[in-house]
Image 1 (cartoon, rainbow, N blue to C red):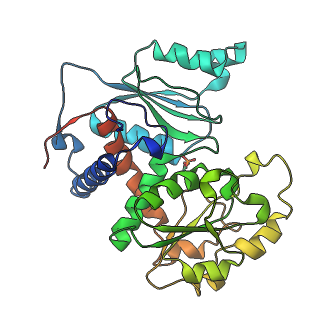
Image 2 (image 1 turned 90 degrees about the vertical axis):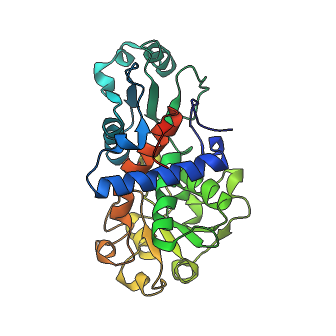
Length: 312
Ligand code: CP
């Protein structure tokens, strides 16, 4: 099991060695970025081959799409974007599966895919990287989150991580649960009962009914957006009621340890999940998550395309 020359659709695809390699490469890219140096000096490029990445983004995105595009540019991979569904043959009735099959015949070096559905089967003729699949998984976001935790708290092992909010619809929390457990962290969640996760993955995971109790326990609090676009039925409470019980603001921050780390994968609806004050709190690493996106996604692409690493 490894993502070298293979599709990367789930945290389950990563070997332990892959995880170590991605964090190491992301560290190197972070240092090179801080020194305003080219990422290309970390590996030797095969100049006989032009590399291109097809970014198929048929669900909205800001951070993931732009950071993957920047990662491609930093690594010498040409990014080609497919996001204009209304301008594509999908509006003429072509199915998503057929569109995808067609795009593969263009022979990109890899495809980065964000879409609403559950994963359909991918062979490895063209590696596919998950850029966020519906409510299934978002593995590169989990790598970013753990990298950010480790840069603040040295290691994820032994840390208590509280996931707060709409866990039921969150691909980010599914990938984080898998990755954090593998790295020896303790995970718990706090959300309205209508947004409790249903997947077997979450069986036996600790649940806090009261946000303040969860915050006292946590070394890391990971807030999630309320994904109203995925709510088929009412969640049983209004946004105002949700805010009263699950909002992270100045009052709730008093319960959080001084050494804690606050995360949000974004996009964040300020005034609902958290107040703007949280961004100014020294425990907030939300901006660092965005910045780390380029380093982690560069590391992931360099591994999937099996770049010859020369920096060690
Ligand atoms: N975290 C995340 O996936 O953000 P975007 O939807 O902006 O890509």
